[in-house]
Every structure is written in C-alpha cells, then in structure tokens.
Length: 204
Image 1: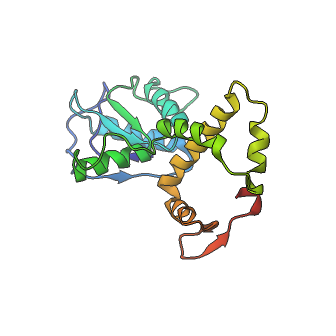
Image 2: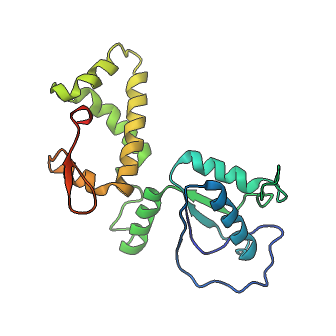
C-alpha cells in the first residue's frame, strides 16, 4: 500500500502537528492490519483541508474495499483491535497502474497522453473478449479451446477475459520485464537480475 503524505481528515484529528513536506511515502508489509493502523495514525496526526483527498494505492479492488470499511470502523475498534477513524471520506483509493497513468499525464501533459490507457483493466476485458476466439490452433492453446467449448452465452469467455485482464494489469506494474520479453516472442521469465528461465510448457 502506498500513501501520499498529503494527509486526510479524521473528525478527532488535531491540527497542532507540523505539516509534513510534500513527497511520496511507500509503505509495504504482508500484514494489512498493520498498514491499516499506520494509515489511521497518519490521518489522525496530519489532517488534510476539508476539500482535499488522500490518495492511497492498493494492489487489488478487494483490498480497496476492505481498507475503506476498516477506516470507517469505530475508532475504539472491536475485540481489542486498534479500530479506524469512525468515518471514511475524502479518500481516493486507486490501483497502481491507474495511478502511474495519471502521473504520466500530469508530467507529460494532457495533450501527449490520453485520459485513459488502452491497457486499463476495464477496457482490456473487452479487447480480450474480441481476441480470444481468434487465438491460433497451436498446441499451446489446447486448454484454452477446451475451456471455451460449449459457451453459447459467452460467460466462460467473459470470465476468462476478466481474469486475464486482471493478470496483465498486475504484470504492467510488477512484471513489465515479462511483458517486454513476451512481446519480442521470447517465452521466458526474466528474474530481474538479468537472467531468464524458459516458460514452463504448461504455461505457454
């Protein structure tokens, strides 16, 4: 989770704390409750003006919904937990890919960068819906054709397009080197150290 240090407001927040310097704070942990507690403490310590929004980046829509509910929880918490702010307002919870695109737009100009990426997850779903029936007859596509068989209402195709769009959305942020290799026709998995291993046959 990434939190921009332009803090949001909690009703009980104090405005006596010094205003932090503008910048970017990156906080990561494998325990979301610890991150939630840190966000709550930051929001209470450094409230934003009423009409400003706090920007929080999360890795999935599920985490986004959980975080909003956790922040809206009562400040006292339950079962000994730290609790939230009692209200969740003035929050913009976004996925990394969308945030990066907005940053490109802000830096390069609105004329140079369109409002939304052609690879946004929502748009990618429909592009994949059109492309999936066109995949070739190579043996690698055998499991795909088997899955899409008997799909007159195209539910399976839509479900598969959603899963693929979500994966490729994450690859754009966390595995861009994989996408770059695959775009050149190399069926490999780069490891970030300059080494690559062949893609397993069952995953091609």
